Length: 534
Image (cartoon, rainbow, N blue to C red; front, side, top):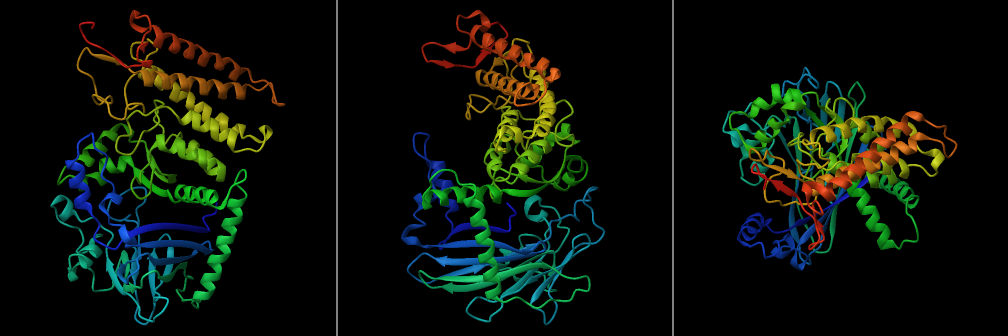
């Protein structure tokens, strides 16, 4: 996918969002009752909501069109405030070594111009068109502030700027007119539209973000009709792309479900910036005035000072979970292999590069605690992506598989050496994916003298060994015209040995007849051993 056409949908209720009701009702309910969901609040009853469609279409590499369609699903007229926002990522406040700029970027509107000028010393000069609604000539109210943290609100310390990133909320919701910059410049700008939408009708707004020439001259604006034609063209191109990847005989609804699923996947690609050393040594100290739980969690990453993320990554969800998580990434890359195999392979190689992967072979877990332990599914993901990303066996990317296999060997050794402390081929430590709610936090140290053998952790390592065996046999050659590679043949026996030892251990550990297996329940259970031997 080129991302030349993207579309998303947000369902926006016309009444105040029921935050308080959701929190209080779920707090009141017992574990025997179901979760109180958004639909249970009745806020969407009578179709009293807006469908907000946001579409992007590339006119050129540095020329992006934006179309926002507001559809009122109710039968009566409703009022809406719309604030399309353009801002610069804050790279000036944190005193970072990797992304520092000498001058603060600037967004401004000059007299007589219906554009916002966006100036950045590295990106150059861009423009963002200011447009009226589709049926009148009234321009929006333009609000300016700085894209800077409100330290006063969060940590009860002084703000570095008179204008902070939540200024538009304070201006609109709290009525604080002095929250925005009257000088009409800043690093974050919103176009404030306020209008009515009649029942069962819609309003459309068009915008354009494009690069200006070095002299800053404004080109002739393209018309709404021209923008609409570009959207139609890009959508047709996207339609052709998806038609090429549908498999089997699918009806219109089935194709739509697949299309929406891929759209959600593609929309959760984002630029992710996290230089752990900078955060620990400098950036993070901004938050010390009020030490909070999130800050405390992030401090756990002190063993990952080598990690430096400045990449486009697939994140769990760009809306709710906008951070890197290796476990989630492994699963995302399976559907990615259908539509963008090169991206899937590059993501797998990236998280095992030396500026991500720990020198001891550990693959990071997730932003809040890189040290945490999640099931070892990266090898499985790499194996599946390898097989799915080629039409025939001869076209498979063996260079990719070889590259990731060598790094996965380090990770396999880390698991064997660090998570099997008693050398019994039974593994422990960390969230292993079977028990989301356990009796205690298995990532923490157990009381002195107590040990635990995890049935799920052990089975994951057996699975890891099987996948590594499959990869090593694939790379051993001797079939499909590939020459024999003795090095990979020799190492494949290592994974057979580990698998056999693990299966034996999980069924015989502790001298019990069935090890961790329970005949009555037909289930493998964790086993805790106390200091007294019980």
